[in-house]
Length: 105
Image 1 (cartoon, rainbow, N blue to C red):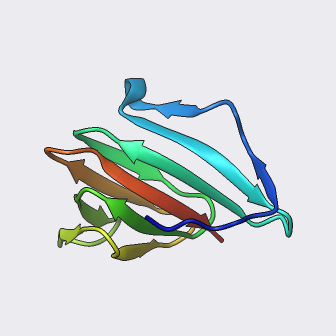
Image 2 (cartoon, one colour):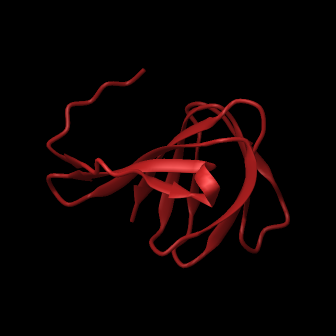
């Protein structure tokens, strides 16, 4: 477990997507940097991006296919993947929930 002291704010209202299969909270740091911390329950989902994103895996495992790619890749704890802005990615979570930190921009 990584503990970090941050100056900023955490949205108390959760963002809930895909009928509750993905739940996250937005964290805004003092410098305006925005991140989300969340969990994806077992499902196959497609996410669209506005800004570029770095998805950091905290626990669990997910299989990812970026838009325009024919290949799937699996990510586990300590691994991350980059998603371009104005794009999308497919994600498959099987078994245990997938916990992540999404770094925007």
